[in-house]
View (cartoon, rainbow, N blue to C red):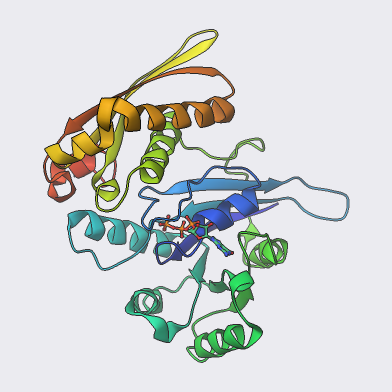
Length: 300
Ligand SMILES: Nc1nc2c(ncn2[C@@H]2O[C@H](COP(=O)(O)OP(=O)(O)OP(=O)(O)O)[C@@H](O)[C@H]2O)c(=O)[nH]1
């Protein structure tokens, strides 16, 4: 069979998680319309068994966090993680959703990609929002760079051209082992999934500057026969943020907890008792200790 690792890179909000979910056909990466949602690397594993006329394939997708010029240590650590990923994978999918001339974000990634030998496919996503002439302009602009082995237009949201892209990815993979069991979709521990779902709900319920200064840590995760008990701490940067997260009479935090619990019950297929606490930890985004503690940075 063929197998390999595929890194997905692109500016925040271009649709990396949506594409991954579309390929996998199941919700594993967390999406939201606020940028910088995905802080950790999430893997999706796509396995197609061998049939009479086709060999089997296993693709291990690595969803890198949004690469961007880091203004603080969190941003810089995210960019480092993504750059390291690019060198190790068998193929890079670079997602964009607009012209190169539109902003510095994509240019920054293009410059990074120039330094990496790994084969690359450019994915022009959100074609459902583009006029054909806009698509053509983007296509030409990028083709002139001479950096990509192929260019695909997709709508990750609708699934347009996604199966074709998956087929093309296969061309870049070589004979290799099954890295993971056939029925495994993601190797991320449930704990991580839980913290991401809680964080996603926070992003939905909170406005403006608070969400990105928020981290979620799972304190305990206990599986009982008919119930999973989870207790999680939401860390925020300021005392005033704590008040916003809790809301008057605890309304906000109850809403977050309920929405997270319902989704987690569906995802994990069990009843859940979810307890949420809010704590203030000033400047956690600039602290090396806290970054590694929350799992956003490799420990030294
Ligand atoms: N119209 C349209 N919207 C899309 C498409 N793909 C993704 N989106 C939307 O774009 C937003 C961002 O999508 P994500 O998948 O979270 O983006 P991401 O690149 O993973 O973002 P980060 O995790 O922040 O790096 C969401 O609101 C998606 O619904 C698409 O093909 N068409």
